[in-house]
Length: 496
Image (cartoon, rainbow, N blue to C red):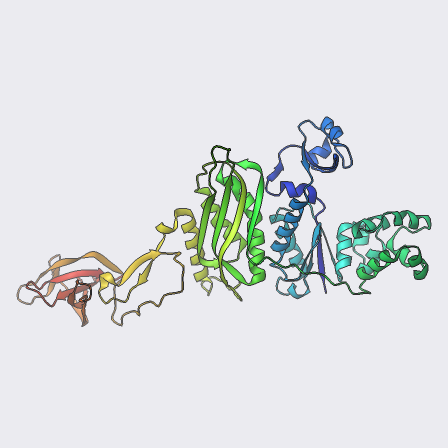
């Protein structure tokens, strides 16, 4: 087994700044019980340190913004990160301030441990996690404690995992495992400074002195006893919200926050083997008591269902950039309305130049055009079961959903790519009755194609179509009426 552990060492502050592209924009910190828990770089540069009272910190840093620590916001950020990383492995464990991934079965799919390591870090950054410590180990407990307790020197980080565990400082390991900190004072009194020192103690005597939980935690980290984990249980349906740090009055400012919701959606879809077909992005507006505005809903219908985060974000960005906001926005909600089975169709897996993925690229382009111009302005032709050429094709929205239609079979006789809006009457050569174009006779090629249809809707036609060659070697499509008082030749199409 191989475990990746991600420890969010900046969780209290990042839970507030997740939706802001450049942080708060001024010195800020997180406080709990009127004491500073965490501060950003500008605040640290002004002398604000963790453990300091809020009053002292405010006197040192002019304009310091103080956020109250919010456990619900922290849990929401960890949940978004866990769902984002579910695209790499279904074995995800959510912790209070981090995420564990069992990735042994995913190494071959993502190109090895190093490539997967980089992909996980990039996905975490896209989910709004800026401050992150990662570690890898054969057991979950070892990876978790190594991610939380940094070794004293870079040389120790290159040692095997059992030796790295033995070199961990005792106080840091106790804090990472949530054990009584007074054990550190007791063990320091007998000369124990690291976990390796504790392992050298007689086990029976150590347990009598209350060190049983510590010894058990060490055994779990070393893989000597079982360490069962509770896997992430994704929600049955995806609907996730995010409150903005600043009120946004420009739709372009919402793109960054939307990315924080698209990443967990992509992970949720990958874990469920689904692809998004219909999304709704809800913009909640800042309103007054007298003027309550309804939410703005941006509906995104995809012609080609996908679970690719980059493609989804691109389409939502196109919609946001052409949306006029009636009022500032204080929160976003991304809701998955419809998903389809997508097992075995990973985005980009078969895309090659001129290969089987060419159709997927075309559908992705149509989705982007519909998001930018509007679905009603992007049309595609569809064959209709009608023999009359002018009625054999109709235009429909390119993103129109539903099951694929059974298109009418293509005719056996050649048909031109370009039809004239209306058939153009041609002159006839006296005596022979051959059609003339600009005074020159047309040479008919092959046999005629007879079309008689339209009695069912009151627009009957009875024609004999011919492929004709003009003097300039162009191939034309002409027909002659078979019924009626005036029988004439007409030009109806041009071959490419």
